[in-house]
Amino acid sequence: MASLGLSVVRIGEFAWSRLEPARGGYQLDWLARAVDTLAENGLKVVLGTPTATPPKWLVDEMPGMLPVGSNGQVRGFGSRRHYCFSHLGYRAECERIVTQLARRFGEHPAVTAWQIDNEYGCHDTALSWSNAARDGFRDWLAQKYQSTEALNRAWGNVFWSMEYRSFDEIELPASAVTEVNPAHMMDFRRYSARQVADFNRLQADILRSHSPGRDIIHNFMGRTLSFDHFALGRDIDVASWDSYPLGFLEDRSDASDERRKKYLRAGDPDFQAFHHDLYRAVGNGRWWVMEQQPGPVNWAQHNPAPRDGMIRLWTWEAIAHGAEAVSYFRWRQAPFAQEQMHSGLLMPDGGKAPGFAEADRVAGEIAALGELPQTGTADVAIVFDYPSAWAWEIQPHGREFDYFRLVFDFYRGLRKLGLSVDFVSAEKPDIGGYRLVLVPGLFAWNDELLAALESHAGIVVTGPRSGSKTLDFRIPDALPPSLPTNILDLRVLRVESLRDGCPVAVPGQGAFKFWFEHAVTGALAKASAVCENGMPAIVRQKDFVYLCGWPDDQVIDSMLRSFAGELDLEICPMSGGVRMRERGDLTFLFNYGDVTAGIGEIAKQADGGGCELLLGDRRLEPSGISIIRRRKRTPPG
Ligand code: GAL
Image: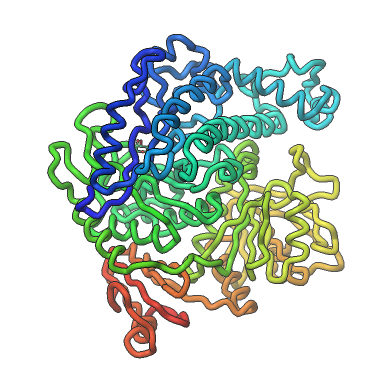
């Protein structure tokens, strides 16, 4: 590991059955030997807390800790993440094992960070429909509403005779005959997200008190929106995520078949970057890739091998977006159990797997490049909000309406113009430094966000569906988007969801897909684009813009180009699978595509214009990377 150029090793994240083979019989010496061995070789250690894999004896002692599916079935022992966040007995057990580990290893000089648990929410585990969750939910509701009258009013329980007389009558929102009350479900989502944050904080507090100066990290997942990552981000020092580009393209993408085939061995050109930027925001600027795909994985529908060069590219791309570290999962392929088909940097026999050479190369390149500039602030911000993802999952109103998908469409549009993007939480909308701010699909306004948008100097783009509910999951009295007329004088009178392939045209620009709103403007707002049916498409009032539908790629592109022009944002349209990211005065270029792309003007400047080509060259081969230090952007040829 050390001679490969690795500097940090994560271990122990699933080791409970070896750390405590029977209650109270702690066996930590083997782990101490491992940490010492790594330390002797100059490697730093991230220690995992093993709470994602409670051992069998514990589960047998406390079967109520197991999570329950929405069908009422217990999700049993035999894999991982078999615990319910609401179970207080299990939390006490976590407190116990984490305290043991923190006491023993907290001040070990090689321990540089802790990873708490592993991938909260993965395998659909943020929600549990257990008795522990039901009891906790009732308590949480009683605290929130104080009286059932208030709850009945907020939820609208007079509808279908759903009124409650006591909090003990309230069940979890599953197993009803048909659709449950969306307000009931929304509160259950909020409650469940809160349990994840509380569960995490418990461990973070213990680690902080016994292990001063070490970073506290969690490894989040791709396209996992089932709890509020921003809330959790407040209790950790570094956000990290597990990046499996090929697995995600197979299993977690909305890409067409054609696109899936095209990027089969490269991954979607925007999916990794999206998460890099999102988790940079979750970590308040500090983030890692904790697990980087090093070859074929085992868990997707199909598990192709990465194209040569992609492991290097993915690693560099994370660095371009400001990652402090990129760690590969895993070191050596395990020849046994569930992940025996998952590759590592080493093969099961200890020989070097194909990914090894790429990791070797990139480690050398990173070392050679030396210190990199700060990431800085991007030109564009997207306001991101986890509760909005829950809301539209609860009430999509049209099969395709998915929050991630909507936000990702805008993100891709920005990237295709060569713009770097930051995400900002809707709860802490620090948007002052951005000239262009996008707020797509936000479920409900909050006062802080409204104040920030109102005083913003720059263009704000909202809609579709932004502000279409109150926090109680009702249609606002003033009708959506429910904004004061001095911000936007517009009312949405009705909405329709559109079948795939049945768009509403926006002449000269493109079309709305999946979603269309019938809106009327008041005296202060004006439609700057109109649909072929004569209804407003894009409405503008000073620098505040509302989109009356889900824009297709053409509408996004033409709209972003025109706002960029107005704001004097330099764009740099990308060809095919080429993407770029700025980091300080460096521009990183990546080729996800399968044809060589010229980086024409940029390279010319690099040769003659006082700009320096630090890595790669003027032709970007498939999987190629170039790093340029330059002052001005110009489109690649
Ligand atoms: C991650 C997980 C690892 C391993 C890996 C396989 O989701 O954190 O433990 O299972 O996937 O790709």
